[in-house]
Image (cartoon, rainbow, N blue to C red; front, side, top):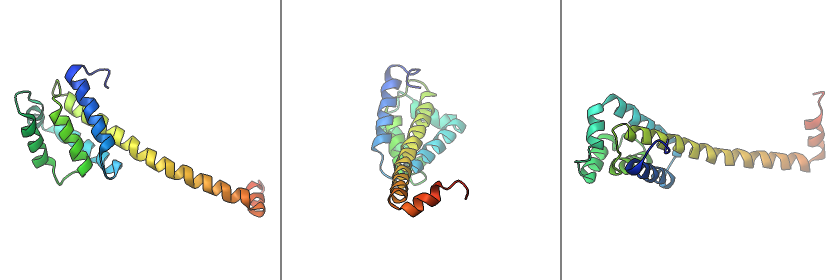
Length: 144
């Protein structure tokens, strides 16, 4: 996606992705919230236009985003959204596209945390089996 964006939008996407990395809380909740925002922006073009209007002050756009989405999405998702609307997307489509990319990154971040846990559990199970000869024999018996 970032290869399709140029200038201000490319820098905005970098800021948005940095906000995803810095977001506190459950990354999956952040991702769900961001996908919800994309859905709303896709169905409310007037809202999308206001949030991407270059003549509107950044703080006014952040305040609008907070009033529309505050308390309805995860705090991490709101922080990412605020970074996105303050980043001056070059086109109206860049805002939902960037937020969607951020949502994907948030889910990947959440999956990575889960993968570490699964990897640790598998390693521990392997250690238990390796340390117990009888258990090792039962696990490796193909007739069972």
